[in-house]
Structure formats: C-alpha cells, structure tokens
Length: 186
Image 1 (cartoon, one colour):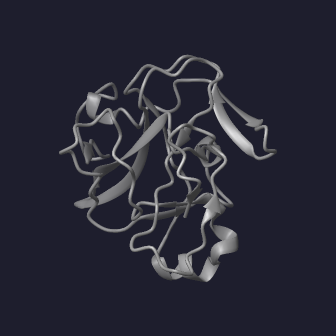
Image 2 (cartoon, helix red, strand yellow):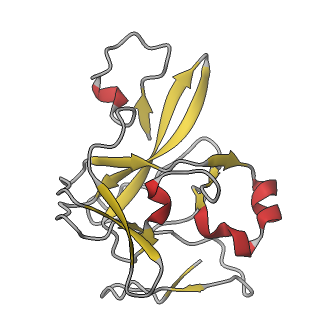
C-alpha cells in the first residue's frame, strides 16, 4: 500500500508522496497487436520501478460488476484477484492489501491504461494508493515498471485469477506466448 498526499496536505506539488498526481511523464502509443486487439507501448524508455500511470475510470460496486456480466468486463480492473508473485519482490512479500474491494470500469471513460493487455510475464505491476481527502480515503491504482522497459515494448500486467476457481468459471485464452504462460486468465 502506498500512502499519498491528498488535497488537504500542505506539502509542495513536487513532494515524493504525490508521485501519481503529476500526470503522464512518458509518451504512449495505442497500437494494434499481432492478434488484432489493442495494446499499449511507450515511445520513451521507462526505468525500473518508475510510475507509469493510474488506472482511470468509473468506480463501481460488486452489484454493478454482476449487472454488467462477462461480456462487458473487458475494461474492468479487479483489485480482488490473486496475482503470481513477481520476482522483484521477496517471496515473503504479500500481494497488495487494500481496505475494501475496488472495481473500476474504463469502458466509457478512462485513460491509456485500459489498453494494457494481460501477460503471464508482465512488464508492469500495480499498487494501491490511498489519499486522504476531507477525513476520508480515496483509493487509486498506480502502475509501475517491473524492470527497465525499452521504447516500443508493449506494457502488460497480470490480470490475475479469481479465487476460488469455480468449475464453470470462464477462462480466457492467454495470447502472451511467454515462457511462463499459464494458457489462460480469468
């Protein structure tokens, strides 16, 4: 969990606790992947650990997720999914813990982050950011580079899996073609 400065904080705009509030620092390109879908890459190199962007969209509740159904979830970010341990973190480091489930749909409103595809060997990871706002906390999702990313390399993250897996769970075929490919994501 990252704790960021909120609107009531008196620190300057260049405070390190405002790293996700400064806007985009790299030039992005939305492009057609070889499989015909959309993808996202940067024209600029990105240093390991660097903030890339936030996942922007409309925050919705679980009831709305259920209402949208499986056909409309292409642009939904689920903070409740389980992710494989990344090699950049020690094995005793747990996945991000957030105070409550967060679902964000970027179908009708969002930013370039909605074009990031799944990969079993991702280039990007996410972390929750809590910002105080009038004695409440706003939860945001920030993407960071796992390793140095050269220009024009696709930006991808692990969509994770729903736990527990149900027998009738919809599994999407994974197209990442990495050596660690699980063959699906859900």
